Image 1: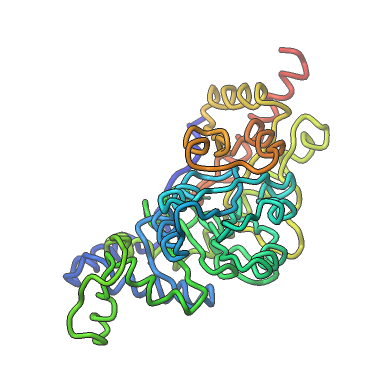
Image 2: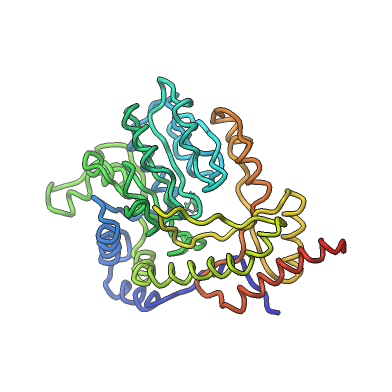
Length: 384
Ligand SMILES: *Cc1c(COP(=O)(O)O)cnc(C)c1O
């Protein structure tokens, strides 16, 4: 059997032609023809106030943290089970990430734990839509409103997922997307900040353009541009935007395929899961739609998870585990605070294994992965 990688970034349309075209247009720095097309696509498809491409989701989160105007010691409540950038963005502003546990069913922040973690210093809630599956946004937005908090959606994994019909990334004050090569729609590195509150739009443009009013200058609203606020360079080059434009044009096709792969894994492993040997993701709640970003299995223990990954690798099937919970990471201990216990986070982190999932994976390859997982468990059942 040929090697089945965990991820493979594929071109799905006119990526290379777009890049050649961008070159021909004689403008390769940011905010040219292709960046504008990507902004339009995001604003139309998501129905959002304003979309701004960034060089990464990390950059979009950094921008959101700057726009939240945090002072040293301010607190931001978030899950511990997430990628480092969710926390780092706020820690870099001198704010303190405050971690709470996740729900066992969605692996998303447990909204029932948020209110008890609020202090007079709390300014924001940063939610993460794990595997592109929505958090309990109605409850979270209600808490934010009651306590006058901003909500940042780390929607890195959640492009075109929905909650009660609303696209993720458009429900909180800010939404942050990633187009990293491991995500559904990709440009190698890449991201976008979605601004859902008019109050923040002008400052967002300034922060993204090195703290200058260059965006207003390019629109002819001022006759020269200068330093007006904090900022850095968050915009991607036109080469990245040209690649991304072609990916966005086929986003529905990519997501449909990824959802089909998840469904195939689910059906193929359902008997094994029913036997109690391992778990597969529960059915997605009827009020939300996930975008097929991740398919994972939960082994019964860390030892089994490690053994399964090693066994799969020996059959050239590459799987991946994540995350080291941030509350127990060196950075988390230095910069953040933990609220309550992390029973679910620690348990999931030990037992979760992601199976190969990318646009170009074939049904035969998915079946080979399913067979390899089943073979591992039947060997164990037989005591071999
Ligand atoms: C991938 C990811 C990020 C970081 O995205 P980059 O574009 O690589 O900066 C942040 N948060 C979550 C939840 C992610 O999955």
